[in-house]
Amino acid sequence: MVTGSTLARRALGREMKRLRESIGMSQSAAGRVIGVSQQTIGRMEEGQPTKVSDLYVNTLCDSYRATDDERVILLGLAGEVRTSQKSGGGWWRAYADEMRVGFDHYLSLEAAAGNLVSWKVTIVPGLLQTAEYRRAVAWAETPAASTENIERRVEMMARRQARLDEELTVDIILWEAVLRDPIGGPAVMAGQLRRLVDVGERPNITLRVVPFDGARQRGFGSLVGSFVLLEFPKLPATGLSEPPVVYVEEWAGDLYLEREAEVRRYRDAFTEIGRVALSPDASRQFISAVAKEYTA
Image (cartoon, rainbow, N blue to C red; front, side, top):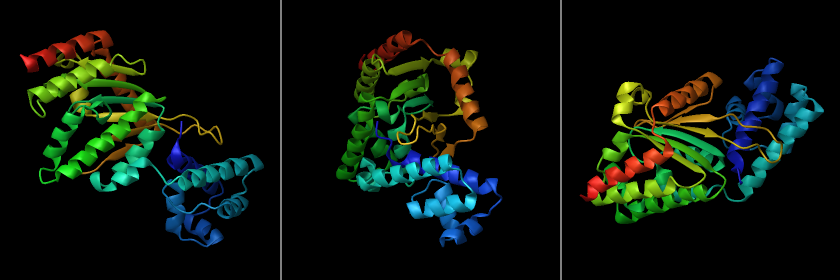
C-alpha cells in the first residue's frame, strides 16, 4: 500500500510538537532555532505541506533534546515525506478544479486508509456510486457546470473506487432513506441499487441497511448524521501507527476529528447503529426488493 506523504507529515508534526512541548519551548522560539516563522512551525506540527529538511529536523532535535531513537524516527518520517512528494503527489491533484475546497485532504486520507467505516443518512457513498448516479448528483450540485466538468467528476469517482480492488476494507451502513431518494430517476436508482447488491458480495466490503422501522425502534443515526471513520496502516519507514480520523461532511465546510474521545464517540455510535441494521445477507435482499420497486 502506498500511504503517500499525508500520514508521514501528520506523524512527523505530532512527534515534533510532543518534543517541543516536553521542554516547554514555544513555537516562535522553535522557529528562531531554524530561522523560520512561528507559522511555519505551526504548519509543520499540523502536518501541512511545508519544507522538511534533514537539517531542520536535526537542528530541532538538538534543541528539543531528542534521544537517538527519536531522532532516527523523525529523520525517517522526513525522508518518507520527501520520497512521496517526488512522485508528484496524489492522482487527485489533476482534478483540483472539480472538487470543493479542502476535499483533496480527505482524498489523501482515504487513499492512505486501510479500513473505512461509514454511516450514511443521505446519498450513496462515492466509493459505491455508479457513473449514472454520480452524474445525477453532480448536476444537482452544480446545474451550470459543463458536460466536460461533470464527466471529470465521474472520472475522479472511478479513480477513487480503484481502492476497493486493493487492501482497503470497508464497512458501510446505509439508512433506508438513501435507497428511497430517487436521485436521477427510477432507472438510475435501480442500477445504483443493483450495484450495491453486487459490491456487497465482495469479501472486503460489508454493506448493511437500517430500515425505517429499525431506526424508530432504537437507532439514533439520523441524529448522529453521516460520517466516515478512517483507520490507517503502520507507516512503512518507521512502523508508527497513525491515529484514526473521523470525517464529517457539511454543506458549509468539513470537519476532521482526531481526539481520542471524539473518535471513540463516533465509533460507539457506529456500533449502536449496527445493532439495528440488517445483516449483510438480509441487507442485499432488502436492497434488491427496493430496486425492483424502481422498475415496477
